[in-house]
Image (tube, rainbow, N blue to C red):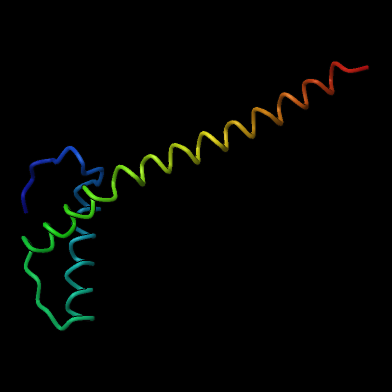
Length: 84
């Protein structure tokens, strides 16, 4: 397996190996197709390039909303403490 780390690849070596094995198993089970290591790596890389950034941005937006909601609740609690 190519050990060169790609800029778009957030996976650890173990996660990458596991994903490649899952791709190979999927194609064997669902399409009766023996897929080599290089082909499975190319499929993984294609999907990481295609979906990696949008998934990352979605995660950031979800975290931002969660934190904004929590800060709003804290502000309400603090206001309640000072209102008489």
